[in-house]
Image (cartoon, rainbow, N blue to C red):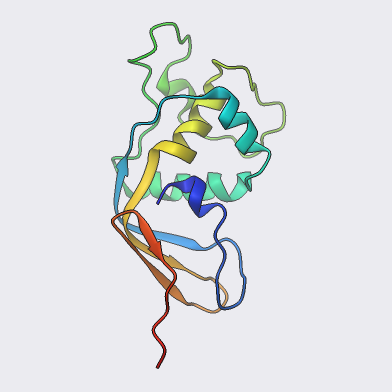
Amino acid sequence: MRLLTHNFLACLQCDTYPLLVSAAETEEIPVEYDAEFTRRMLARIDYPSLRTTFHTLREAHKSVRGPSYDEDPDATETAAACAELPETMEGADLSDDSAFLRMVHYAMNIVAVRNGTLECPACKTTFAIRDFIPNFVQETK
């Protein structure tokens, strides 16, 4: 499950948002950088939730490290220069080659949870994530 997907999910039981991610396994799934798509999604997502989830996963998993500029020799910023997502988007550089936009692209589209759980902070309902797919089907008792 990519963090972009996570950003649109709410609890089916009580409609609480956002769900807490507990990842047993994360991976990077390469996606070509698309500045225009990233800018459009920034207008639709809950940026504080994306930032919190991304930093939580990064602290827990070494595989979540940040974008690589190896494939783009014209990029002027380095991965180290944008290692953190800022607290707010206020004043952020949204130009095509900005470090901020590349970091948001990385967090939304490349970081993925292979296996883990989503937990509702209000009602404590948990939903499994298996092979990148969140399962919202609940067994009735």
